Length: 92
View (cartoon, rainbow, N blue to C red):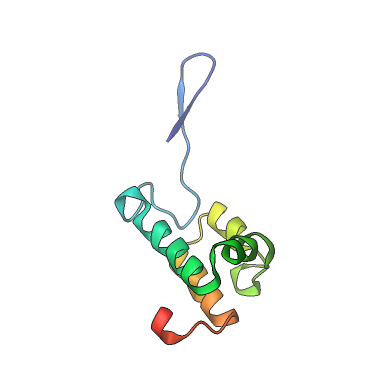
């Protein structure tokens, strides 16, 4: 990932700590699976609301949306959601 400067130089931006420069799976497969699970468990509207509004202590007092934006692995986020909302083992 890079940012073009006015002089044409290309600045390389390092990924956040704990993230690799490349996604683990192409085409956002893990992210798609995360949102599929959220919607299956909570319904589309409530899944979006929960992601935006509910603050998880185990995610460093962040919402799902903030944790995703900060580069937290979706598996860690999904585990936090499962623990707080008692998601059945069959859906984890």
